Every structure is written in C-alpha cells, then in structure tokens.
Length: 254
Image 1 (cartoon, rainbow, N blue to C red):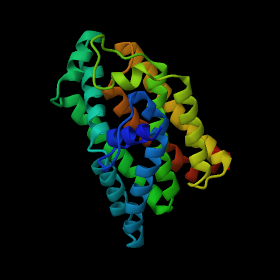
Image 2: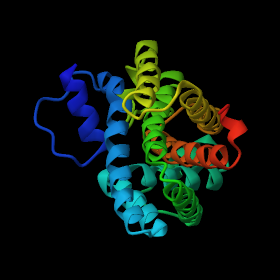
Image 3: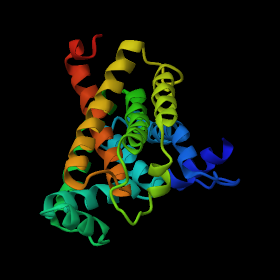
Image 4: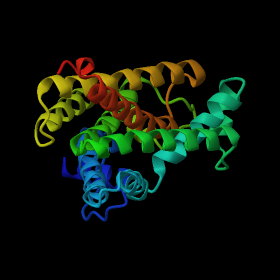
C-alpha cells in the first residue's frame, strides 16, 4: 500500500517522495483523494497569505498558481488536449490523433483561458468568504473524479498509452475506497458537516459523470488527457457549486 502512495504522489505532484513505487500502478488510485487533500491544503494555505493582506485577487492567484506548479500543469495540459480533440476531431480516430499531438491548438488555448479565468473568479469569491476548506474540497474531489472515470470507462486507445496502467487495473474496490475516503476527508480534517460534504460530493460526481458520458460518446473511453481534464473541470464545478451555495444557502441544504 505504501508503494501506491509513492506512485500517487509522484504522478500527481512534483513533491519529492522517497520509496519504491507500486508494482501495479492502479493501486495508487486508492490514494488519489489523499493526494488531493495534500495539494488542496497547500493551495488553501497560499490563499491565506492573500487574504491576510486583504487582497482577495492575490489570494485566488496564489491558490491557482500554486496548484499549477504543484502538479506541473499536468491536468491543464490534459484539458487543452481534450478540447482540441473533442472539438477539432470530426470522428473518434481524428479526436484521438489530435489529442496525442503535443502542440496546443485554438480550442485548447481557449479552453485553458476560459477555465482558468472561471476558477480564478470562483476562488476570489471563496477567498472573500475565507472558505479555505472549500478550496481544499474542490481539489480533493477532483482526484476522486479521476478514480471514478478510470474505474467506469475503458482505455480509449487500442495501442495503450501513458494512463493505461492506471485504467486497466482499476476496479470497484478503488472507486469505493476513493469515494468513501474523500467523504471522510471532507468531514475530518476539512471539517464540513455532512450536508455540505454531501452537496459538494454530489457536485463533483455530477461533473465527472457528464464528462464521462461525453468522453464515451466522443472516443469510446478515457485517456490520460481525459483524466487530467476531469481534474480541472471538477475543481471548477465544485468551486462554482460552493460559491452558489454561499450566495443561496438553500442549495446546499444548509
């Protein structure tokens, strides 16, 4: 099990981690929500510096930039590739070919700009309300979403790819542990009550399912780019849901 944690940290972050990786990469899926908790906590800590200075835009920028640095921009790259492939490819083969191209096209650039601005706006509002736990929750639940897609859908490329080892070995035990641990982390140590934890978890699942259905229709499964895009989009959707629940409390059953 320790090897799974090492693999999860090395895959999802730039943090230097000693130890041997898991023999089966899919074992790291058990630890994805925990790694999301670590990343999210660090992002929230960075945001606190901006809030302490009374500069909410800086708080949002620090959280957003910190997340990009901590993950090497891995998920943002996946989002750009997905947008290029899904919107630029006329069929499954074309979409997969475009997604494999390391160059970023117009659809990918626009998607990155829009999603990053969207996340920034949400983070400004969360910083204004000092909702640091919610910042962490978005990152945590986004990694849970990756496990859901890896478990639910097959790998889309017959020849395999960088995420094949994660997807091919994924099973229902990985999904059960990921969802259960994510919910527990929202209760302890994030500190939410169960209604808010349930509301944000449901928001993450809705976002993930929507992307999964689109990915299945477009390319018949998932790739590493889809998993990366899932992380970015789920973060954005959870943060949006949180902002709306703050402005309209009845939405989150509070």
